[in-house]
Image (tube, rainbow, N blue to C red; front, side, top):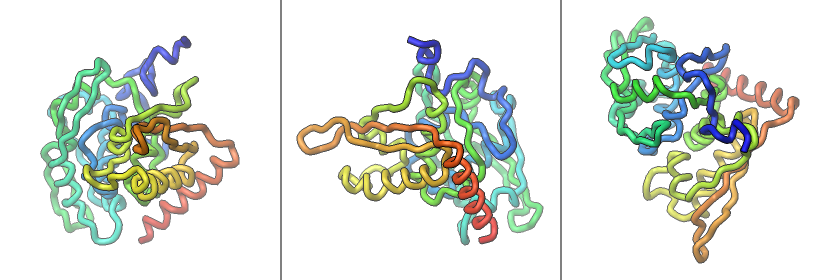
Length: 268
């Protein structure tokens, strides 16, 4: 067994909150990617949450009770049309997820804690916000993360595509591992499919899996596919997610596509 295979997916010897994102990217702790309970969040809420995480990122996220501030003008780009920022903030506050630590312990946390919005209708309005106090020690010890391109995050048009992109981004950097098997229910949760929606695998594939894969192939520096690997009778019970890094020319095309999509979102 190689050294890299002794560690969790995306393992890095430095603490996640000690990392420094490059321009145009954010670093997202794995503890906030592979979570249970966020299936009700909209694409707009997921985009906004990523912006709040990117703004707060750093050692201070590992301390309980810290407040962070961000101009509302920086959050409006996470929403399209007339969607209200306050709706997404309230959805994040109401969402309780199960987060798994390195030791396998699970913790239930609120995605977003208390916050104050000042001058919400004005150009220079501000949001001051905090995270659940139980999240701080998990992030403080985190050593597994994903590097996400900010332009790509804004370019995804479905929450299923965005969720798949984040999940793959924390796996694709691992050497010698190129696939992972999931029970269908676990994969539904990974994509953020609400309970009771798309109950058959055929519908799940048509409405969630295939569109998500298409978006990842279009916008990410890697490709992927999903195939059934286990059935009970005619029912698919397990799938395999495979990934691979694109060629240089393919990655140049991705960069151009994601930045074009991002520009169009900013203009809308």
